[in-house]
Image (cartoon, rainbow over all chains, first blue to last red; front, top):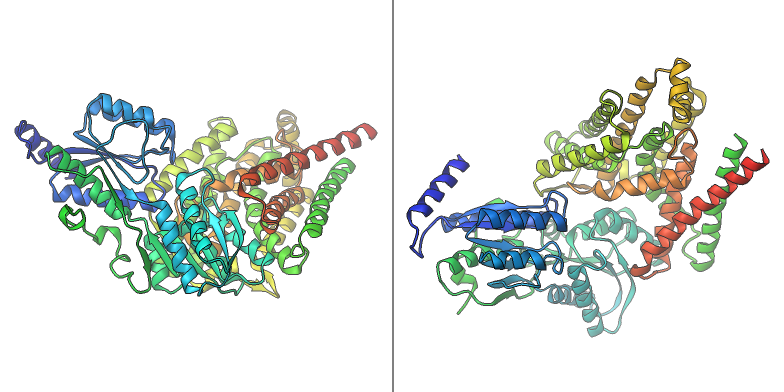
Length: 319
Length: 313
C-alpha cells in the first residue's frame, strides 16, 4: 500500500516536471542510528511533514549505530539514486565532510539537522544548541536548589560534541552560583547502566548530594534508579526531552529536561528541504532557543510521537 | 590443581592490593555499604560471564551474550507489559536466552562454523532483530514484584548478590564434581582426545552454548529489574566486560583451564576499578587508561604465577 502510494507520487512528480511547485519531491533522510529514540522521533516527524507537503521520505540509517563507513556508503548510494534533496545528520561532524562534498558535487541540496556538518556546503542548519541547553537546565536546577548545596555531573561520551557542549553549559551555570559545590564530574557514556553504577559509587563517597546534572535522559533514569535504590533524594535534570524523560517529569521523578526537540528538527528539516526545492526562502540557520520542560509545561510533550503533528513553517520561522 | 589454586590465590591478592590501595585513598571505600555496592555491580557481569566461562573452557567463545541480553530484555519487557506477570517476564528472558544459545550451539556443532564467527554473526543478527523489534522505543516501568529481583534486599544484602552466589556454587559443583563438568574441561584441553575417549563432544558443546544463552537471559532479568527499562542497545556495552571478566579470571582462551571462581574475581576487579575511579573522582579522560592498565596487570601477574608454579612442578 505504502509502496503503491509512493509509486503514485513518483508518477505525479514525473508528470509535473518543470513546475517549481510540483508535489512528490523525494527527500532522503539520514539519521545516525536505529537505537536512540531521539532519531526515531526525527524520522516520525519528517514523515509527518512530508505527508503534509505531499512529498516522500526515504530513510538511510546505519545498521551499526553511528558507523562512519556505513553512512559514507549510504551517501554514495543516495547520490546514484538522486533524491531531490537530502536532510542530513552526520554521524561524525568531521568525518562526514567528504560525504557532504559528494552531495555538493552531485548538486543535491543538503539540509543539515541536529549536529552541524563541516567541510561542505549546506542550504541551512536546523538544530538545538547543546551549550545553551546545558546552561538553561543547569540554571533551572541551581535555582530550585536556592543556589546552595552540592551537585554531581554525569557526562556523555567523552569526545562527542554534544557531551562536551552540554557539560560546558552545566559548568557555566555552576559559575553563576558560586555557593554550589561540584562534587564530581564523571562519565556515564550516555548509558543508563553506567550512569546508575557511577551514581551508586558517588553516593558512597558523598553522604549528601542535592542535585544531579545528566547530559541525557537515559543517564538521568539510571541516576534516579540509583537514588531510589539507596533511599536518597536529589533533584535531577537532564537533556533531550524524550518521551521517557517527559514521563519522568510528569511522575515527579525528574525535575526538568532540556528540550532537544527532535520532533521540530525532523519537521523543519523536511519542510526546509521542500521549501528550498519550491524556491521559497529558507534562513541560513535555525537554532531553537533553549527551552526547559518541567512540571509546569510538560503537557503536549508526553504524547507518543505518532500522535504529534508538525507545526506550519510560518508558525515557527518568523520573517 | 596446585597451580590453579596458586593462580586463584594470586588473583585474590590483586583484589586485596586494589582494596588496600583504595582504602588508603578514600575513607568511603572500606564500608559495608560500599563493598555490597561493588558486589552488586559485579553480579550482573558475573552472571553474564558465568555461562561464557563454560564456553571458553571448551576453547569456544560466545560473543553474542551482550546482544542476547538486549533481545531477551526487550522481549521480556513486552511480556511483562502485556501480562503484568513476573513469571512471564522471567520465563521469556530465560527461554529467549536459551533459544539463542541453542542456535549458537547448532551453528558450531552442526554447521561447523568456528565459534568466534558463529557467535559474531549471531551478535549482528540479534542486534538487527532487536532494533527492528523496538524501532527506537523504550519500554519502562515494571511491577515492584519483578523489580525486587534486581533492586530488592534480603537481610540487608542486595538480591543480585544472592543470585551470584547461588550460581557460583551451582556452577562450581557442576564443573568440579559432575561428569559433565569434567568433560567440558576435557573437551577444552583436547577435543580429539575427548572424542576418542567416548565423550559426546557435540552434545556437550550444545549444552555449554545453551547454558551461556540461558545465563545471558538471567542477566537480562537482573538488568531489567535493576534499570526498570529496556531499549534496543542495552546489551552492546556488556559483551566486552563479560569476556574481560573471564580472561582476567584466569580462564584460558585456549580452553581446558580456568574456573568460575576466577571469573567472579575478574568481575569484582572490573567493578572495583570503576568504583575506585568514581570515589577518587579520577578525570574522565584517564578512566579508560586506568582500566586498561589494571586489566593488563591482573593478567600479567596471573601469567607470572602460573609460570612459576609450572616450573616448580
